[in-house]
Length: 382
Image (cartoon, rainbow, N blue to C red; front, side, top):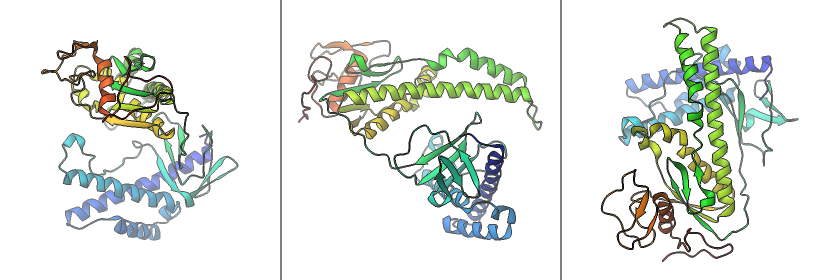
């Protein structure tokens, strides 16, 4: 979005009201928990009504983003309580909602349908705030809600919630198996659809290290305000990280679009890259962004009506795609060629795992590459 000074100041003031309300919800929730009482959405709604009646500064703001903030607080608190009830490990818990300090949390405001309208290509928010939007694409239908937020670099964006229509593609009669990795982000049963590791993070490591040193030299003492040089270095680093993230997202979406366009059914390894953070491959795995690439493939398949099947990843490197035999011991990472002791099949390790995805998904691969000729019907395995 392109904001005027007046609109930017109005959004910041509106965000200040919502931040005060969030901190009040946190305080009321902690007090109710200490007293053994329940602090549900109904109680918080009454608190909002009383606060707006007693506080003219809060009543001057729009009620829609304040009500939505209470809904978001309730969802966040309910999720934290559920994690505690399920006794999840500490590293998997979301944590109870905490206080938001001024200047640390980026502004974010949610508006439902009665809190905004689109007129002449501009976004009119409740409270008389008018924003100029630079549209990335046309909206397929009327949006049900919008979120106005500011990222870490300082850019303002509007994210609309719409009903996404399915855009079906022509049938190809082909299937694809996808295995995730670090040397190659995606190894598939088709050599033409493999996704190599672009290493965007490694290429900009020197630049990020330079910005880190600049921030370290200018780091303010505790209790002192940040200098202009520190803020500049922090902004440059944030812009570089944003560029890397957009490069990864762009590469993932282009590859997903190509894979979905050329195949009717895609068997994807349901891989959880979380455990790689404790290994020697943590930095390279994080640079690969396997989770984001997998999510892009699932979203693209849903958008174009393709059948994307998630396959359990256990023992995929030990099974043989030809005969189904399983090795007695796990293969070390240094061994990149899979040799079956039962049938004698020899193939690259990741290619064999990609073919195993097709077998486990209930597809009968035909041919060396595990894909059928153009127009050949898919057959379900018995």
